[in-house]
Amino acid sequence: MTVSLQVCDVRVVEGDLIQLSVRCLAGPVSVGTRLGAGNGIHLTLTEILVYRRSVDVLDTALTALVTLRGHGADRVRFNFNHVLRGVDGAGEV
Image 1 (cartoon, rainbow, N blue to C red):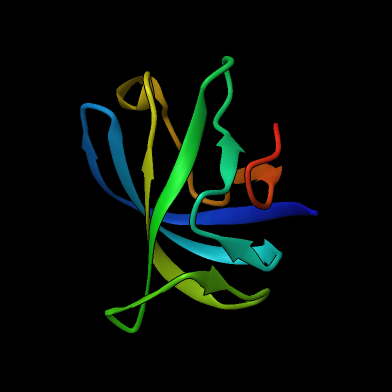
Image 2 (cartoon, rainbow, N blue to C red; image 1 turned 30 degrees about the horizontal axis):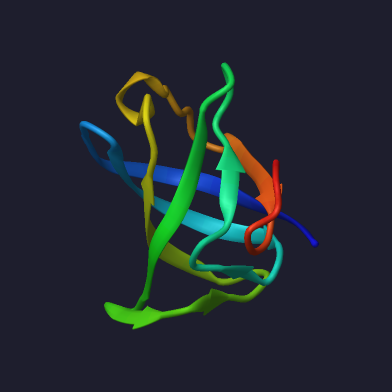
């Protein structure tokens, strides 16, 4: 299933880790989903926090703080409203 997350705010960028405040535009999206970040960089969703509680799935229209990891994450530059797209689960982007 194709999923998409809209970037609302960039919270942390450190090495291979990025924390973003996002809104789920098309989901649900699960921990383990691979998302394309541009320039051939793919990031894996490793944590979803909704109201400071860890969840495994983010449904459409909900907002959350998410943690993404992947090689090259520190080179990704997001703008407000940037949309990350991917395939839920272990599928390729």
